[in-house]
Length: 65
Image (cartoon, rainbow, N blue to C red; front, side, top):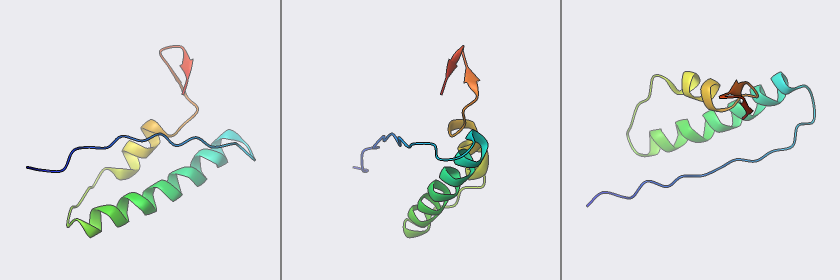
């Protein structure tokens, strides 16, 4: 059987404006994700799109994410 999926949450404190904080966190996350994909022989072409969707201070359904 395959490995089970693991979910996680990243919490961070903003030390500069929201846009710059999001950019920094996306860079850290992208590096970790790309390393994990490489170690497992996988390729993802939409990592940047996914990170922009989930790591931002934009409003979603009336709530800040």
